[in-house]
Image 1 (cartoon, rainbow, N blue to C red):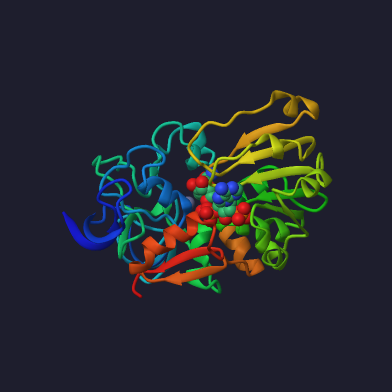
Image 2: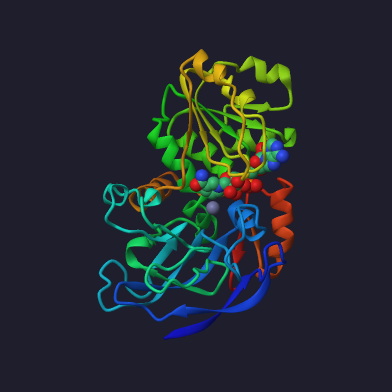
Length: 347
Ligand code: NAP
Ligand code: ZN
């Protein structure tokens, strides 16, 4: 059995986002039914729906920064009850049996992790639909507890942008005495600045938008470099322990590898969708590493949410109503958002 609910999505790759209806399954024994209050707009929503990563499953209903409250639970649910404030991020299921799942890194499931949207349900094979909708039904193991005291709209982007930066910052040991650079001050990047600063690292923003300097410093950056300014870039050559690349567009990665110090690591997070060319000598020079990181596991996502509650960290947001999604997407692509759009689903 299913229930028809209101959603917003694209009927074809690259088509505008329009109001439509989708089916949500009735809760299985371990499912939680979430009434959605807010959903963040991630650049991945745009890449997916516009076909920049290949043909999406249609219709595509994006959204994986979901905050809402529980309206019903299946008979075997133990972690949540009706009324709880909850979040849902980028994945809604995984095999649960592989090495990665057992270690709490469902994001690296070796078999079948299921995306919140544009993916296939492991039981029915049905297309998954994301948070640009009035409700969602999710296995309780993939539901997060939203801590008290965080503004729910501003906390929504923590479910993707927050965890995507938190995981590599923790994995590569960002903290006091470490020099961390964040490439791109967008949705992901501004969360990286806030989190790295709260972890005690020295934070530099590398941006192609000179106008973002004051914001970067206010968000917690110690330094701001305009990436098109050769002199500014030369001044920070061979200086960083960790660089997190959140840029959504193609760029010359070699210009940034040079900025790593000895044993430094550049982590790719941005996904423009095309291969990049790497000059090997930039890696050999100082035993540098080029790495990647994809969102985070459920356990570390909860850890990040609790850290944010403790430190009062949320996203800088612009609230929109569902009818403004198309305009908001164009502004995201133009790097013109401060710093995350969040859809007020009931607005
Ligand atoms: P966003 O808000 O659009 O931010 C991207 C930033 O990249 C922009 O604010 C801009 O920063 C910079 N940028 C954009 N176009 C550029 C260009 N032509 N040249 C140089 N810099 C440019 O996007 P987002 O939501 O943060 O997502 C960023 C990327 O991460 C996307 O590709 C997304 O799909 C990917 N992503 C990956 C994961 C993961 O698990 N690894 C998770 C979520 C998203 P400045 O103006 O400061 O230069
Ligand atoms: Zn995302």
